[in-house]
Image (cartoon, rainbow, N blue to C red; front, side):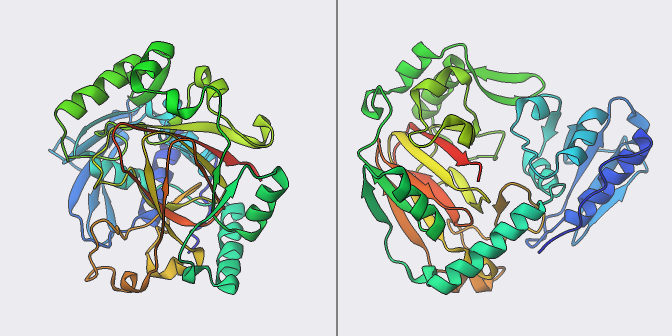
Amino acid sequence: MNVAYPQQDFETDLAAIEGFADLLKTGFQNPEGIRGTVKLHIPEYPDHGFIARYADDLYIERDNLDRETDTFVSMPISTIKRIFREFEYLDFRDPSIIGTMEFSGNLDYANHLGKSCLRPSNFTLERFKAVGELHQNKGYHNLTEVAYLHQPTQRQILEVISESRPVVITGLEPSPPCKDWTIDKLAKKYGDAIVRVRSATQKQNMREFVQELKDFIANPYDDMVEGFVKPYTEGSTMPQEMWPDFGPLFFDREDFIPPQLWLGAVPTHIPTSSLHRDPHCGFLLQVIGRKRLDLYSADQEDLIYPHKAYNNYQPCWFRPEDPDYSVYPRAEQAKCLSVTLNPGEMIVQPAGWFHQVYALDSPNMSASYFWRY
């Protein structure tokens, strides 16, 4: 499943651009036969960009750069170099990354290309391998329900993590409690806090985002593009102004990667996050509305077609919400474990569990923390 580590330093900017093209080609997969073109523009070197053409493989074309393409992406040379330096943990949702870029045209193609340039660390590869073996030995693919723990001790939580067993925790909440929060209260308390950055020219504070949610609720639509056209923050970095009110409920704050915000109004039949897995243990606190998590044990990796190019989380090509067994035939054998989170409940999801999340109510909000260890 591994793909080679990319080179991290280049003698010249032009060598970095060439290296970036090679990085995309070696990470590219196209199981569904998408056909299209993406033009990559580098503002500092407008004559040295390229066109990525989707076929069974990815083809890099450098002739006739002025021709029409399906998608246009502008990325400065500093961001290209940063991708190489940070490939193990790069997150395009980071405002300091996506805030340097510009997009137009078919944004699904831009997403596809972005995922092709990621690579896993040795830590992630080793963690997934070990978890897969553990799940196989424990027969977790045969689990039929997720256990509940009421007001557990930190020692109990550590035992759950060591066993790689998901559990729902009840009886522990931040102050004020989750039942007291509404989107209007969020807008009032955190109005100027930046909650989402879409590009170099598109940023939203909490007040603006809540208004978008209300507009969506009044006039919903189904045409969603992950990371772009979706009234959902999709795990963006939680503004620091919100940290005191939303956990973590265990251990010390320094034990966790900075928290993520999952806030929005997404149709209940569309997953808020597609099927994927993480190399760190996650704590997801449900605040507003309910969510359903569909879990797949790590020993089912071969059944659900994970991406070969990924870094700090690994998406899957197979989409359980719209299964195409003619393209992904092994997925018919996969076994799903589902659990619903209510406001005030938290799921501890050990590393390596594949999962997909649905918002059962709209609007919806969760806060998540990943344990560093």
